[in-house]
Length: 130
Image 1: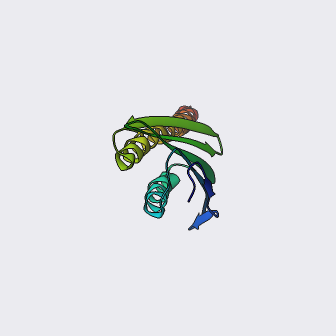
Image 2 (image 1 turned 135 degrees about the vertical axis):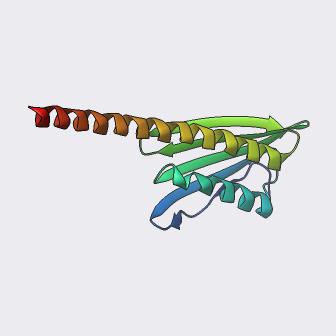
C-alpha cells in the first residue's frame, strides 16, 4: 500500500449505534493490524455518543508517532492529538484523552438533567405543603 493513502471504512452498526471511521496515514503505511486496533479503540466511545463519525490521522516524523482524531457527533465535535515513540501507545493515549473528554460531557449532561429534575421535585413539594 502507498503511504498517505486514505482508508474509509463502511459505516459500523452495533446494536442501533452508527459510526463512520476514516483512517489516514501520513508518511506511514497503515497496516491491517493498526486499522483493526484503531477501529476497536474508537468503538469504545459508543457508550458516550450516538451516531458519530471519526477521522483518525496517523503520522510519523523522525522518531515521533503522532495520532490525531476528530470526532463529529450530534451535539458537537471533539479534536485530540498525542505523540509517543510507538504508534500503538499513541493510539492508546489518544483514546484515553478522548474517553476522558466524552466522560466529562456525559457527566455535565447528567448533572444538568438532575438539576432540572431536582427543581421540579422541590416545586411540587412546596405546592403540596399549602
